[in-house]
Image 1 (cartoon, rainbow, N blue to C red):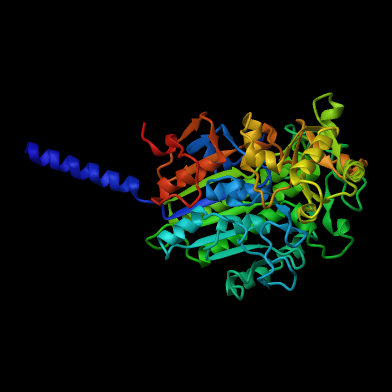
Image 2: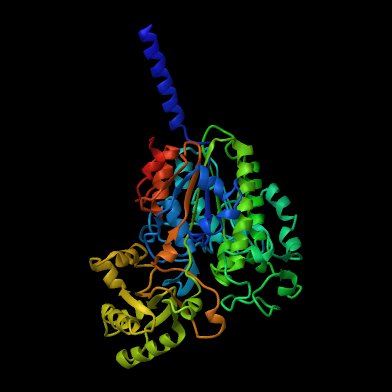
Length: 545
């Protein structure tokens, strides 16, 4: 009898262990472009119990999650989330950089070797070739070749980088047609279900409608006034206020770029992703599949109106309803056998002009005039200007021309660094030689090194003071709206929520980095670590109490 009880206990224990170690049928990665951490709490009261609050109340909330490098942009953010490493390894050092061989600015997923599929425009001339490391989705497909990976976004980089090199299908928005498209890198034709979806012409229909607030506008107490001087004013409007009639804004033309500035673009992406999940039968076989979705319109709207705007509050209340719809569709597809994480590729700084007016630290660095003076100084010092490009606080020098001059590259870099550090708003500058040779002095410098590559980054990189943004020139328009990219916590502190099979309801206050997502997924999915992953698993998610 005693032996029988012990045997039964061991069998039950083994069955439980086996159940705990079985990967979910579907893993879902959600990235919300430009989502600040405090949005979880500022808008919480009006979130649905079945959307974001489902993850907050019934899942794991990693409340101290930070980016551990700069620059904090969309391309590097998505690449870091899905590779588990930083730009100095995966190579996506910015959304765009100066290509020294081509002598031009290129996009991080631009690839002229492949044609667009689903459009006649160049919006699909893309591939993941610039991503030097494997993603968690690549690792899944290498380990289990029958697994399926599907990624979608409004932005090309928001779909391509999460999908990795081995994705079954990756799709993004075409600004010329309003359709979802892909690249010849993945396939030669759109699948029939995608063509049927595109032919519904959802953007055309929605652009004839008016964006008004979801609730009475006077109830938006978590935001500033609707008529704010810090927001971008759309064409045909005299102020940045509701309602937004996009057929008037676009001048009666089908200008599909404005569609991405509406909350309807999030609906469009959700519906397309659900169709992709169903038609690709994600989660329907014996191996784990992966659905990666990146919501971009939050960033586009956030740039124009800023984090204190009613527009951003409204788009998040509406996005929450999209999550509810998505989660219900996933559970209809796979039941409870799924895991989701939700995070952001970066956050955002409050509008600097608002900071100035409120006597808070902040301001602008106006680049065009500074560059003019810099070139004058270089001509005076060296007889000519060796500057060829400025992009994202990176200054690029003509290294080939310098090679045939009487001057050393390090000498010119050092001169430019000293000149740049005199600019208003610049806190510090680094040369490429510094970042390759010098030991780091503090965490801020270390973050620069993690975001630097000697082939793709500039010869001089400069950082601004807290609350500052770079702008070309000083105009009334340039002081409206906002951006991101810095090492400061307003850009680096992002939400990280987990929910699903085996995920406990808990709040974690331990500091984690964005590169810790992949090592955690590795344990959930029973995979080897992708090629460059450096983070550590979030133990509170993986261990029993």
